[in-house]
Figure (cartoon, rainbow, N blue to C red):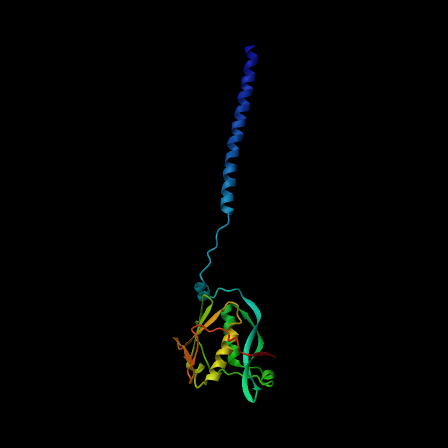
Length: 211
């Protein structure tokens, strides 16, 4: 009887040891699975502030039709009045590059076919600006040289401001414009000292025509 029980005990012990071995082997796999899950968990991306973004010019490159504004004179009740004329140009690249291209178009002026239709520009063709402009909280801070306002009457100065502001405010990122002359903040421009707001927005009552 005793000889029969010994093999049974040995069998039970063998089964028990085999089970312990299986459990031991399964433990590292579970740990490994946990480690992998931790490694694959998402990491929050650090996004730079608005100022850092614009300083480093980190913008998606795009190509779009950009509205550029010039002027055209019309006869209104025996008086000649200027109206803004919106034309379109293709600009592409980062936001900073597209702003520069828009300003270049303003400086170049109307094309030949546009000139033939009476389209003009009030801006001096030799104006310059500081290329280190900044966009802070949606407001574009940009500085021009003194030629931007030189010898400009009140009406001419308003045309210049409107051409500039209507063009730059076409960019959805720009909500307003703060002008400087030679890096100095100004509140009036031109020989007639036209008052301008701290932050320039589109003039609501300005007439705009399309070619």
